[in-house]
Length: 102
Image 1 (cartoon, rainbow, N blue to C red):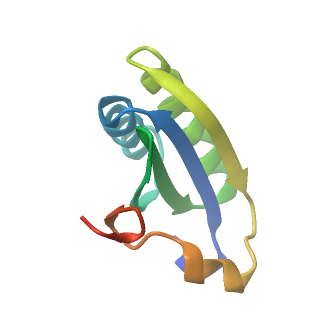
Image 2: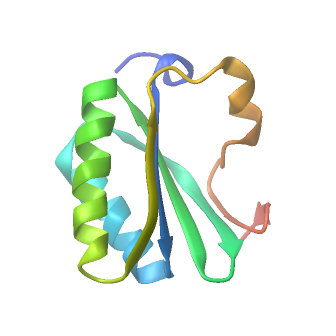
Protein backbone atom coordinates (compact mmCIF):
# COMPACT_ATOMS: atom_id res chain seq x y z
CA UNK A 1 0.00 0.00 0.00
CA UNK A 2 1.17 3.53 -0.69
CA UNK A 3 2.35 5.84 2.09
CA UNK A 4 -0.67 6.44 4.33
CA UNK A 5 -0.21 10.21 4.11
CA UNK A 6 -0.61 9.98 0.33
CA UNK A 7 -3.57 7.60 0.38
CA UNK A 8 -7.31 8.11 0.28
CA UNK A 9 -9.28 8.74 3.45
CA UNK A 10 -12.63 7.03 4.05
CA UNK A 11 -15.07 7.85 6.84
CA UNK A 12 -18.33 6.35 8.02
CA UNK A 13 -20.31 8.05 10.78
CA UNK A 14 -22.95 6.03 12.61
CA UNK A 15 -25.34 6.59 15.46
CA UNK A 16 -24.25 3.99 18.00
CA UNK A 17 -21.15 1.93 18.70
CA UNK A 18 -22.46 -1.44 17.47
CA UNK A 19 -23.09 -0.12 13.95
CA UNK A 20 -19.64 1.52 13.95
CA UNK A 21 -17.95 -1.74 14.92
CA UNK A 22 -19.90 -3.55 12.21
CA UNK A 23 -18.82 -0.90 9.67
CA UNK A 24 -15.16 -1.22 10.70
CA UNK A 25 -15.28 -5.01 10.46
CA UNK A 26 -16.92 -4.94 7.04
CA UNK A 27 -14.47 -2.33 5.71
CA UNK A 28 -11.31 -4.21 6.62
CA UNK A 29 -12.78 -7.48 5.31
CA UNK A 30 -13.97 -5.97 2.02
CA UNK A 31 -10.76 -4.32 0.83
CA UNK A 32 -7.10 -3.73 1.59
CA UNK A 33 -7.46 -0.73 3.89
CA UNK A 34 -5.93 0.29 7.21
CA UNK A 35 -8.22 1.11 10.11
CA UNK A 36 -6.91 4.48 11.32
CA UNK A 37 -9.20 4.87 14.30
CA UNK A 38 -12.51 6.01 15.64
CA UNK A 39 -13.86 9.25 17.01
CA UNK A 40 -16.68 9.38 19.55
CA UNK A 41 -18.26 12.77 18.86
CA UNK A 42 -21.06 12.72 21.42
CA UNK A 43 -24.77 12.17 21.17
CA UNK A 44 -24.10 8.59 20.15
CA UNK A 45 -22.20 9.53 16.99
CA UNK A 46 -19.16 7.42 16.15
CA UNK A 47 -16.91 7.98 13.12
CA UNK A 48 -14.70 5.19 11.78
CA UNK A 49 -11.74 6.20 9.59
CA UNK A 50 -9.79 4.05 7.10
CA UNK A 51 -6.94 4.74 4.66
CA UNK A 52 -5.82 3.02 1.47
CA UNK A 53 -5.88 3.26 -2.30
CA UNK A 54 -8.86 5.19 -3.67
CA UNK A 55 -10.58 2.14 -5.14
CA UNK A 56 -10.06 0.08 -2.00
CA UNK A 57 -11.35 2.86 0.26
CA UNK A 58 -14.43 3.36 -1.93
CA UNK A 59 -15.17 -0.38 -1.89
CA UNK A 60 -14.57 -0.52 1.87
CA UNK A 61 -16.86 2.42 2.69
CA UNK A 62 -19.60 1.03 0.43
CA UNK A 63 -19.41 -2.35 2.19
CA UNK A 64 -19.15 -0.79 5.63
CA UNK A 65 -22.12 1.51 5.13
CA UNK A 66 -24.29 -1.32 3.78
CA UNK A 67 -23.38 -3.58 6.68
CA UNK A 68 -23.81 -0.91 9.37
CA UNK A 69 -27.18 0.19 7.99
CA UNK A 70 -28.57 -3.28 8.74
CA UNK A 71 -27.83 -2.76 12.46
CA UNK A 72 -28.29 0.94 13.02
CA UNK A 73 -28.25 4.38 11.48
CA UNK A 74 -25.53 5.46 9.06
CA UNK A 75 -25.34 9.25 9.33
CA UNK A 76 -22.68 9.98 6.72
CA UNK A 77 -20.19 8.30 4.38
CA UNK A 78 -17.39 10.17 2.64
CA UNK A 79 -14.17 9.44 0.73
CA UNK A 80 -11.44 12.05 0.20
CA UNK A 81 -9.17 10.77 -2.61
CA UNK A 82 -6.09 12.86 -1.79
CA UNK A 83 -6.48 14.76 1.50
CA UNK A 84 -4.17 17.73 2.03
CA UNK A 85 -1.25 17.04 4.36
CA UNK A 86 -2.53 19.47 6.98
CA UNK A 87 -5.66 17.34 7.42
CA UNK A 88 -3.44 14.75 9.17
CA UNK A 89 -3.39 16.91 12.32
CA UNK A 90 -7.12 16.38 12.96
CA UNK A 91 -7.35 12.67 12.13
CA UNK A 92 -7.95 10.20 14.94
CA UNK A 93 -4.93 8.09 15.85
CA UNK A 94 -6.91 5.42 17.71
CA UNK A 95 -10.06 5.25 19.77
CA UNK A 96 -10.87 8.67 21.19
CA UNK A 97 -13.77 10.07 23.14
CA UNK A 98 -14.47 13.75 22.61
CA UNK A 99 -10.94 14.33 21.33
CA UNK A 100 -9.17 12.49 24.18
CA UNK A 101 -7.96 8.91 24.34
CA UNK A 102 -10.66 6.51 25.52
